[in-house]
Image (cartoon, rainbow, N blue to C red; front, top):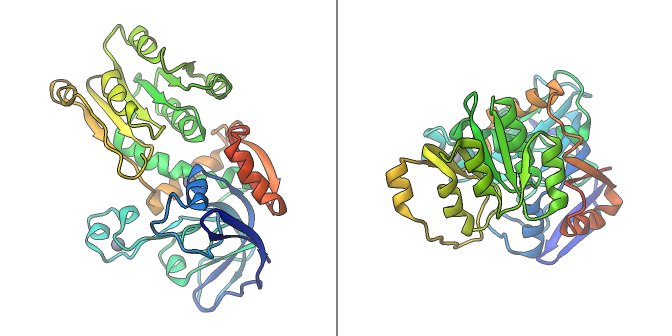
Length: 342
Ligand SMILES: [Zn+2]
Ligand SMILES: [Zn+2]
């Protein structure tokens, strides 16, 4: 099979590898689509090293179909459409026992350490199969949409913490694929108004098409004030890893409001925040990192419903042979999100 391999920092390569055959307990997915993520670029450049194995097959947002099941695997049939929850948790550490499997102390991730989706096939380890990481669809979903189950599941994990109530005004900083997913989730959760900010005018267009008020970073304060009579947003979601936005977000929130630092910030980042904003406004600040299996399941159900505008998010598709070009296109900020299909 073909596989796009992370050889070493600065170097990826399309390689030929033997077709995997599933051993006992394992399951083989034939990959139908993998969407690319900004985190992949940080792996490739060497900026992200934690949990990353040199030689790994890249890609952690994948959709496939069960191609073969190993001995002893029950509950899966060849031909079923499926996507893996990419966090393989240990299920026995203190964090897992607290109910935070996605923050597991021993977690391993597909596309970081376990071979991922930029290949013709992905072999799912026996423990992942046994733990229910492979989520099947109940009705067919376009593969490039199903690949979004991973980023969508991460947004759902954050949404379950920041919560959107009927009538809320939600401000989202950043109109990349993640900002647009939060936008759609906020709308579906009953937000009366969603205001999205982004520096790039071309990135604002899809947000506006999804029903948000899309503004520049300098206009968001006024837009939120206008929408709320000067009170502030019920919810603010930070989708850009810029520490300057840490205080901006606290400023935009209403008294008793909720702020999510969804984006990861560069390693070692510190931000100066006006802590009295937290104190006097009694803000609730949450984060969001990875997703539980249940979040992936919820994401798949949502994608099956067809009510999420996934076409507006996955705007370009490349073949696996052109995967390196596809990553260059991510660097060049082509479209919103890029998919690779075999
Ligand atoms: Zn990702
Ligand atoms: Zn654990």
